[in-house]
Amino acid sequence: MTNPATTDIVDHWVDGKPWTGESTRTAPVFDPALGIAQRSVRMATGEDVGVAVAAAAAALPAWADSSVATRHRFLLDFRELLNARKDELASILTAEHGKVLADAAGEIARGLEVVEFALSMPHLLKGEFSQNASTGIDVYSVREPVGVVGIVSPFNFPAMVPLWFFPIAIAAGNTVVLKPSEKDPSAANWLAALAADAGLPAGVLNVVHGDKEAVDALLTHPQVAAISFVGSTPIAEHVYRTATAHGKRVQALGGAKNHMLVLPDADLDLAADAAVNAGFGSAGERCMAVSVVLAVDSIADDLVARVAARMTGLRTGDGRRGCDMGPLITREHRDRVAGYLDTAVADRARLVVDGRDSAVDGDPNGFWLGPTLIDRVPITSAVYRDEIFGPVLSVVRVEGFEHAVEIVNASPYGNGTAIFTNDGGAARRFQRQVHVGMIGVNVPIPVPVAYHSFGGWKASLFGDAKAYGPNGFAFFTREKAITSRWLDPSHGGIDLGFPRNR
Image 1 (cartoon, rainbow, N blue to C red):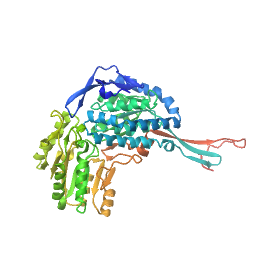
Image 2: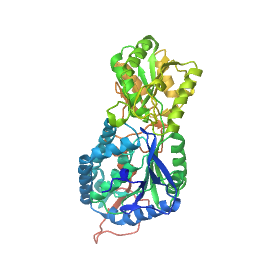
Image 3: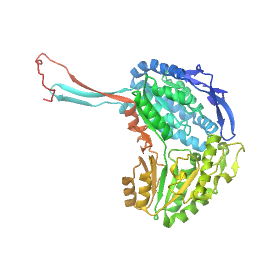
Image 4: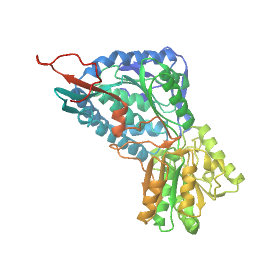
């Protein structure tokens, strides 16, 4: 298989092979650590998307009718190939996203967990059976694929998020058109080519690259039955409203502003370690990053000092050099994130650690911003309200437990939150009272394991289905309930009454 990260232009992947499409429009793909465009990616038109959907639709009948054993064998082979070649994929992620190699390896590992969970499909696709529900009548259910599935994935996890969706969709008998971020597109092609090497028939998994034009073509295409999306809240809402208006099943995971409450009885060293790890991993470009620490007044000074001390040992630089944190994805995004530091000062917050002053182990043209710590952030500030999506950790001081819960619940987001405490009663009250979909107790990034499901509340999730886990198989299948009677000569007669059990 050709490594798409070594080609000058990243093509689409349609019907089991690279495909150029009709569009002549391209976009640059940067190495964020070097600040240079390393290749280009083709940008699909609506017509190009239509070709990919047609390939998926043509492959659907045979794949949907394939045996459970056939699909299971594919997943087994795909899992083995992915595990054997994960270092190659990690290098692609670091070159195009900028995250350090260790973080890239972690991303792939979490994606692999979902592939392994999808291997449970023989059990999870089973229906139910009730014998003799009424005299001589059996009732049973079966689960069938929804059809052609569109997946739109974000730039921050170019391997993990596609792996959240397409292995389960394919295991359930669907075919897929994946639209990855145009900022780091090569991982999607690499995964599609790997699936082909594992024996996946042509047309079952297709990749089209592009921007809003390609996304909207997927959302409105009459042959696409379902849409899975991960991205910012405004776009998630657009995806949900547009796709549902066109009769599609939709799961759209949006943005976040995740809080971490630290109570006075917490282990402050553990809390400080967690705040740094969860705030600055992947340069803060995580929907589950901790971006706000809610520190109770009595321990706030101590906690801020411990966090700042740990930040002095972090190395920002090229992810291929063994650094702790890499660059941001684009120069424009770096500049937007850095602009919040000036906003913080204007809003009378205290800039404890200024990431603009960080020494960098990397090319001076990279998109660098070091870890940043801001104390005494008012909740009226845009620094608190906005999803910054960068290495900026804000500290909001609270009077106590009730004040903290009030702040968490007032947020329009409800993705993830955490509490650090040694009080089991406080932890139990917190998990019951906060209006958030994923909660950590002394765990800063509470991403559920693959056999649970991922998703938030409020403006962090549009649609009823969370990602992967049992929710994933429910989303990618439709249930049929069959009521069956096999007559013998003694049955018959007319009865116009409503059917009832006898």
